Image 1 (cartoon, rainbow, N blue to C red):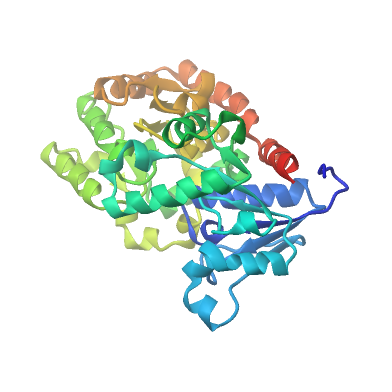
Image 2: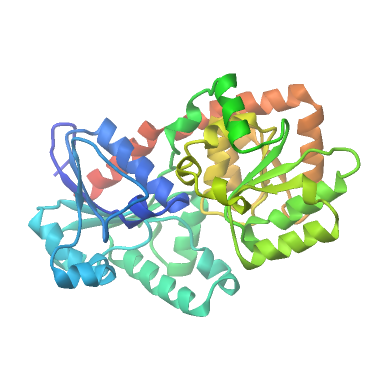
Length: 391
């Protein structure tokens, strides 16, 4: 059956991340569901959520939330999500099921329901030392099962597709790259008045660089701080950090203290009042913060895609990012690229963007233009084409 505008489908989703995750996997899930609902309203979208959420609400005339029923499934919701949900997929006459984050239910391929899985990255395979060994085994088992048993695989970048082929030996023709979008709020121009209100709300400095992401080794905040130290005497512009972490964050803080740059690195999550703000937790205030910054600094060693880069491009915010992994895919011709292992290169980019206004403006304009390749509609279109190919 070929899917067109007039062909109705019941499409099910693994909605755990959509309802409960405030970082990349959650943003991906919510953005895609909203885009599909908007641009392909002829279908019905069923969100299979293992437990009620107090974090995110996803609504629409053609969007339906399904929670586990019965004492057993409610009590063992992880088991429901990973296998028992198949009974509910049949009950709601689901035509196609999309595992939005690396997993599909065990046994789904035996019940006649087509399935698609999105693989965001295989970082646990590439850098297993950065994970708990037990987690690596669990992830590998789940990801391999999904890749082998799903009818088709969506990779969010060419880099991820290559890794799926290399690590799991999946045929290339079973994998389609569908570039994601980001929350449309980043594309809206924020008024100067609104930006000033947000800056006051978060006690932000007048001028600042911005980092957004989890505080883990791979994302490389330490080398950004080393860049700040290099520029300490000539460019006293603070870095605002959105994100949190544990062991690596403490390592970064020790470096900051040792090198006396405490006044130049601001961790928003360290302020309990800020960390508890609903508009911080939901990222509703982030567009104003992005549009108030000088540049996004994102020199990660490896990513599945690098959504903060795309958010910055939509915000007309210049980006300094890495020349490795998939980040050149995310930034295209619109970013300033550096070797993430060399703080001097990061520092040079910060200084150039800060001091050369024409260059910064050129990056901003190129970024906006390149971001048009990653609209919600284009993302929805590419995913629907995958659905079409398997149903």
